[in-house]
Image (tube, rainbow, N blue to C red; front, side, top):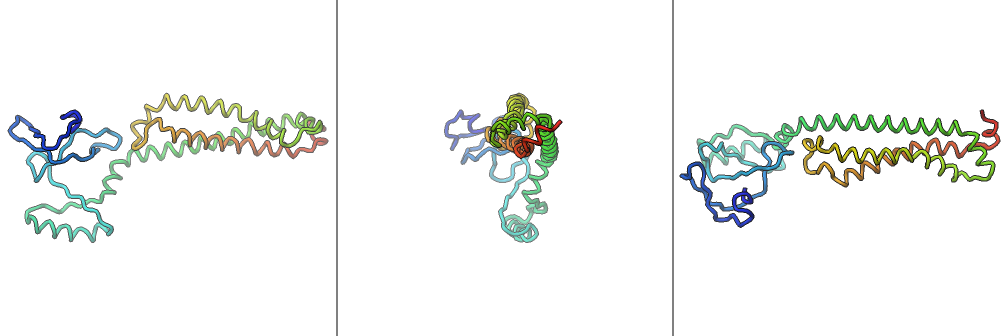
Length: 235
């Protein structure tokens, strides 16, 4: 609000008029932005007034404690009664409950997306393993010939994993490009992180690569243990 009204100048001691201008307020401090509507929405202009003002809502008090809410309520109520006997002090709500109510719809959607993502990761891992295992079984004679002609187990391992990781790398590139294009859909679900957060993209890429490497390594390792003579007789 201070940036919007005074364009980056110091707002202290400036005077703000509301309504028709009959009510004027002097700025005595500037605090950080507050997101009242929703965490994912940008903060709007807001100001705090000294004392209860008609039409501006009731006063609220925030108290930090290490104890429970039940043990805090009597002390807070007694202290406020000493200040004003007529002050209503009946509603006490833990801050955690307020936050849970604000983020519960988005949290449910995020959890469901996470579960579906894990399911997709599992299916992709099984698919990669199945394809590479089938390819190894189809190339048993070829691998046996390579081993008989002097190829080392490291050469076979590199060959099988290299061919298995090629489509994985192509899929990662296509997935990253698609993710950048679809980030607008996710913006409304995010808070404290951008839809194109580089750390998140890097972590997901490393995770998918590690899973794909494991899915390729298992059948590739089995291929290195082939007996050349048995592989040559394999049909």
